[in-house]
Length: 411
View (cartoon, rainbow, N blue to C red):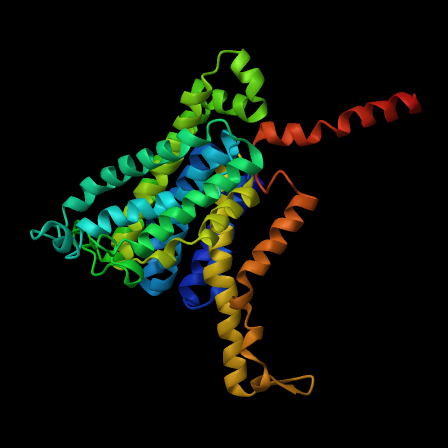
């Protein structure tokens, strides 16, 4: 334990120093993120783990953002997707309800604040808009409630559906929301169609914090609340009822689990997290349009949950972080590096990189790499990187009888 303690402290200190010395180095920032994962996994006292992670997220990360604001933007985006992954983890991971239209709830929350927090609402209600920045905090709860209501609306017609049929219906629901956002500009202009809505009012910051730091702390606060709610739900009778439904609906019904109520609750809980983050997203981006809420976004969040481990809270956090960093930093960083080499006319093995077609830029293969990762995960580690203990035991069980037979034969 002493060795792990020394290594954990050293990892955070060295990686923070590396980011301070090389503020524009992607590798240094990845090293910092890796040190946080090491601290989480290391065998160290709980109080030390909490102190290191707390100091890294509350003190070091804003300081790093002061050197390079892009890193703070990446951390904020990671937080938004962590909350989305945790919401979908309830529906898919705990309750076992495959939802391919999850981004629809994110869109519902985003448009809720975008309409009332911009001058666009004057076209609908006549005047008095946008609402003042203070209303943003009220709309965090409004977005939560509206998205939860949308989740219940989706849950009602799919209560009797399972597996592929459920996936198709939820996929259709996600597309319905996107198409509505794209076409509800006539006869009453509600969403402004493909042009989107802008400018969207941002909340008033406290203590004079810049917007970058303020949104980071706000997202961090919401993620902390989402993790706490997830943890309490997982350990409650509701969480056990969801797991029972996931394992065997018939058995769950026989044991007295109210299927209708529990399924609707799972959809509502998952959707509410997406709704609150939708409000945050629209205020942060100042502009939204239907292209921000495509089917691929739902697949991206689902990939985060599968990569981290379905039903696992740390897994959802890790999966969201890995996929977001891969998307925003690694692939784009490789593309920028390749472009620099092309512009410099570097020659590799007799081939001038200036002649390299733009089709070979790594950022254009983002979805292909996600697909490869998912295929490899399903083959070599189907339980995810940080699986839930129950899921790990389930996948280990089939090997047990053969192992026992082999042991009996040898004896």
